[in-house]
Image (tube, rainbow, N blue to C red; front, side, top):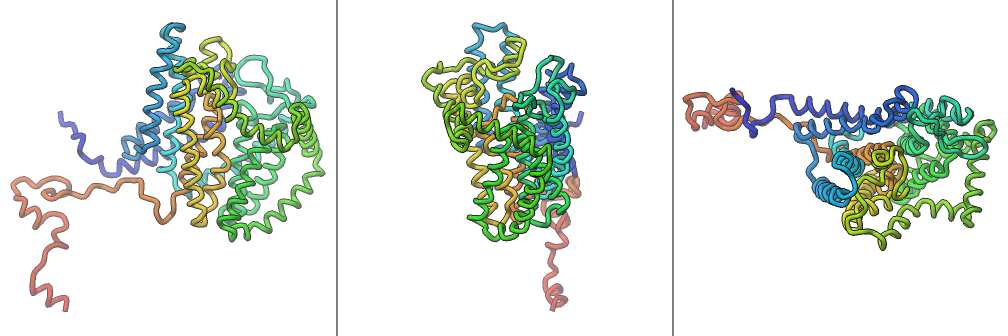
Amino acid sequence: MNTPSAREPPALGAPARLVEIVRRLIWLYFILWIIEGALRKWIVPQFSNPLLLVRDPVVVLIYLLSWRAGIFPRNWFIRSLLGIAVLSQIAGMIVLQPFLPPMKLLFVTLYGARSNFLHLPLIFVIGRVFDTAEVKRIGWWILVGMIPMTVLTALQFRASPEAFINRTVGLGEAQQITAGGGKIRPPGTFSFVSGVIFYLSAATAFVLHGALSRTTYKNSLLFAAGLAVVIGVAVSGSRSAVASVGLVVLSLFAILLIRPSAINRFGRSLLFAVILFWGLSYVPIFQEGVEILSARFTESAAAEEKTVAAGMFARIFSGFTEGLSVLDRLPLGGYGLGIGTNGGAKFLTGRATFLLAEGEWSRVLLESGPILGLMFLLWRTTLTLYLGYLSVRSLARGETLAILLFSAGFFVIANGPFGQPTSLGFAVVFGGLCLAATRSRGNAKEISPRPAEPSPGTHGGQRVRGRSVYADRLHGPGATQAKSNGSRDRRSSS
């Protein structure tokens, strides 16, 4: 049996074909991120638990094909992540082995490893496979999708908490989180309101980029999507929605500082936005949403005995400070990888809950202990800073898209709850899109490997039997350009 050598180059066109398949699978991953909640709530609620892992086979297939195509990243981030993952898995199994039967032990720790580590290399695959044009195509679909998403969230906001449109995942009788005034926080197509919060921040990033560039998207689309974002925030009933969109808007100050010429093109759009907001203030559903949102801000500030601004600041940074506060009461190996996730709790208790902590940094530290937990949090922080550095460099070249995407996704990458599939998917997709957007048009490398040049001693990729090495060099590929006829050539060229 003739089997190709492991050192042989792939068949002609195979890498390009594999790269295209990988690109399509990334699109599938993105689509599943958006519709996963709809599948779990409305279409096949009886399969709600298995659908938690619906993107896992896609991401594994992406890795396999990327490796085959020679584009799987092998940088410091990937190598260090693999080391932390292996050590965390081993430590988790050692810690939980006295308390759990073998199968449950395996399920819990593997789910923890899956939540923390499995999807993160996809950030770097997206950064290699996608270019700026592909990122903008994703943005076009996000802007188009923002319109029906807002219509859906408005309907959910107006409907009663018991309505079919407001059901939660699975077949239980639980309800969505309330916002006050008999209203729920509408989740759109996602499982919970967190998905809408992420979508709003992503749409805001692309709306602002379109307004700054003035040539990327049509004005009519920017107008409709911008209107949808404002209404979506108003009916969200979520302070986090205001904070996430506000962080994206605040990135305009960085753009003003580094590339003030970009803001000059934004003046007319800003005036238009003010007029738009003034007009929306007379729309009844917008008024109702703003009233409920304002009540949530004032009630939370009163309960915490802080101003609204101080309460928002504390809410943003409490996830970091609360996590570090548990360091003095951690066992060396933690309490076991995976038991702090909702999926791990489902394996252990039969229901999704927070067994250790709701905050992400607290969960990671309590699960993995002070050494491995801090290593993983340091890895995430370093990745966040690296993406920020690349985004600022891209902005210095006059490209605003990366910094806007970074402002939409950096907080989730650093502190988002990876045990929640929607948060994990957003961190991965928009971390990857941010990385892809930093690729300079002039410096971007071709990711589809070129066919290997025939080596000396081959003819059409195969050696001609019986020909010497000298004859191969004389008559083989490229010989026409290399051959010289001495004085005859000099005469013909003169």
